[in-house]
Amino acid sequence: RVIIKKTPQDAARTVADQIEAVVRGAGESGATLGLATGSSPVLSYTELIRRHREEGLSFAGTRVFMLDEYVGLDADHPQSYARFIREHLTDHIDIEDSAVQSPRGDAEDPVAEAARYDAAIGAADGVDLQLLGIGTDGHIAFNEPGSSLASRTRVKVLLEQTIEDNARFFDKKEDVPVHVLTQGIGTILEARRIVLTATGSNKAEAIAQCVEGSVSSRWTGSALQMHPDVVLVIDDEAAAKL
Ligand code: GLP
Image (cartoon, rainbow, N blue to C red):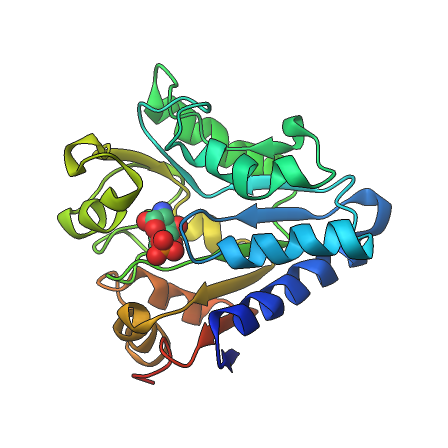
């Protein structure tokens, strides 16, 4: 399902509606959310914080699994994704720190950490709703072009395009870690529902390829075509090439 909204703010409210429905629907047992970093979900997180403060939306009992992390950055590093989600969402809502899990970027053995993290998601009975952004080259999480569509959580090497795209969060491009830990496409596809959000004209090509192109490891977001319950929430600009 593709939902096209006029502005990024409208899209964020729709994404927040999707997340709120799952959180409220789970009741006391608590939902398991898969959350993403990057600029795309930030407005949605801001809207969830507003609903928590002004409308009593509670996240008590909610569990979170993050998608990915830079290898070599610990959870307090300013550019780590673990810190990103605390600053943009979880520090501002009623969710325990211990309920938010990320791949550990500072693990001594990243390969073993990837296997541990993949198993932890399974042991928690999977993810009810996975929120995704998309890279300009069509990647989801850090599953760069060429990734196996059956892949599990593992160590990946970033491509030049993604390093350039993400350099804006660092002092200089050379500071962007080359290695990352990321949930695999196969891992992501096990989530019961997937919501992908993208805004802006720089995502239009990736959205068109992933929605209307063939399923291919060249545009790893195209793997979502194989999932039975995916909602894309995009703005007019990101929809421009559909
Ligand atoms: C990174 C993240 C992805 C995210 C992508 C797009 O590569 N690993 O999860 O979707 O950036 O980021 P942005 O939303 O900032 O464009």
